[in-house]
Image (cartoon, rainbow, N blue to C red):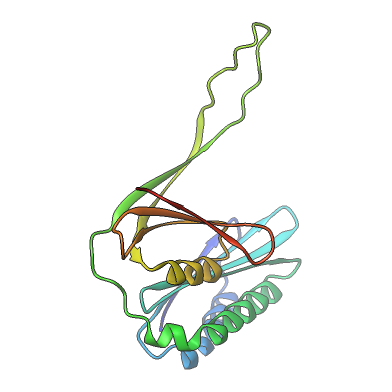
Length: 181
């Protein structure tokens, strides 16, 4: 397993890097093919954050954890990933990435706007842009991918219809699906 570690807003220390690489390396026993893992260690105010993303069998998995200790954050993020991998182990082992065109999708985050005295709002401005690849997959694969990422929304190409779909999480264990016709 190829593991890379990035430090944000903290000093890079070799013991911390080694701890992250060792902990993530233990997940290799659950994943049989060559995988890539990227660990981002950061600090914001008093929270020490570990964000681990693993690519395996064409699927992405993410474990994110905050705590007051960076070593603890790494351990808990790896535990989350281990639970996810165990839950989906059979599906992940048999998953074959689907061939087909990928579609670039751009997500924009807009800043809120204040209404003016005239009642017209100032147009919202884009404060963040994120580009992702919408890959071809079946709806059940998209549900699994969304769980593995811990995401609330996923844009993908439906492998059956070849149309862009949006899957979103509803309250409880329910999902919503928006299909383009």
